Image (cartoon, rainbow, N blue to C red; front, side, top):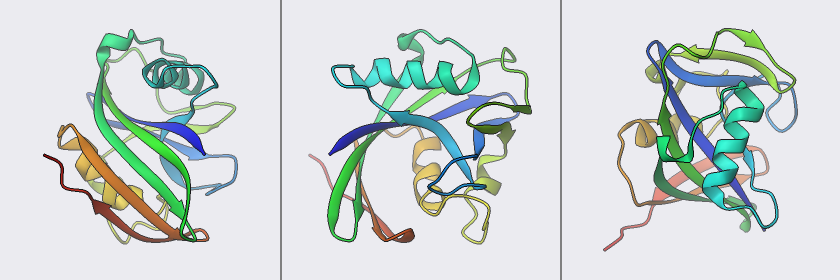
Length: 157
């Protein structure tokens, strides 16, 4: 099982999204993030992924940890995605093509529309929760293959 990060990087004009060059979900909009390296702290991974995908280096103190989302495919837990948000100014020049894909600042409401077929399937459910600023979330995203089934929230004390 692997650990991943997903970051809602908010700019004055929208949330930073990437139109993916790679599978899974090539050609679809997703938030920035990626794998946490072995031995790396999750927050350090979020900061590294932000830099690798956007070119903007943010101090770890600028990130807010929102919670985690278990990623379940065909009833198998394949990883845990740690959710973060951060706010930046205009230091990121967008849109721009990177090795990972096309970066742009998009309206988070548009990105999360249930009928937006250009967004990765679970972003419709998870992005509004991430944008709410709520912390301590414990979510589970269930898939059948590449088909998103549901996002559930576990109640916490």
